[in-house]
Image (cartoon, rainbow, N blue to C red):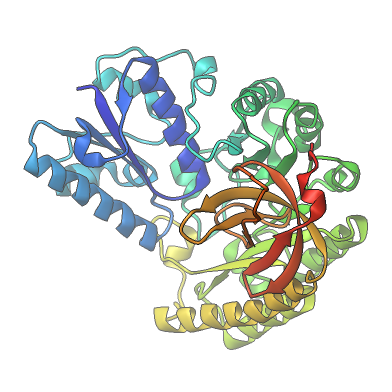
Length: 440
């Protein structure tokens, strides 16, 4: 059994887990294949965060089992958040699965394959990056110490555990040597980084060290937590040549009553003050957030307050989830559940509002020149797609640029682009004459 296929569900943190596992297996001479049908071992790395993610994970498990049914010699392993949370249920209800593992269960997976687990300090050194080579995720910590009422992550991933600055810088250097121009820092709670191992929040210390890594042009940070947000990072961001002025901070809601029910530790006024501080200290910063509609107890007044807050701050990027009633979370026992249909209607209202805001902000970029990181070239349309500093891959906007005769680019190149047109979530532009010059 030498050919392996991994199906990864869920977030970028789960993707990194799959990449670490792939590196471990390749170290032991396992070959990875893109087509599941060609594999001897199918590994499904599941997500169990919300109901929709669980459904997608279960569907992926059954698809793997269909391949095993056609070829009984195949093995199916299930790992990740769903199996961490529902191991006994999977064992009972899907006995055809050959082995079940939790999150970061690399040692047990290797043992099941008769192989020895590499030392812990080699885990990320062996990681096999599977994103386009010009950007890579850097997971700076695991777990979360917060007890948000709606969230199952602490029960799945455990308490916050930071990686050391030295280990992260070493990994960043390896990623840069492999072609990464953009580092995207991820965790469950980026704001808390370092407090468990250094006794104080240390994200700015980490960013200062990462800025010295040769070859990295952009550093982007996702998943800031508003409570105890480290304000010192704003001064560093304002003056940094590499940390992009982009702040992704899921706030979930703004109504004081809802924030209390959600156990968020914030108030509307504290969020307002924080955003006012951010905007004043880093002019031109891109603000991204995530909201939840339909949490138990949400009234029409709470929802109106949420919409008014979106109008007030006009977020550059915004996503919404409808509440998912997760067994084992504090919110599961709350009364006054909001019907799913109503939660969906509220989500649609927020996104309709955000579309107008996004269009307005994109139109303001017309006739400006932007530095764009090119992600890919579509030979069928003859268009490049890329991103400005305002956009994280896959979740934000993109810039579309037609190829220009005599000028060749490749993914990972930076180019200067004049913006000609704007839509809600896309910009359209052309390469400028200055695009030909070397951009560091």
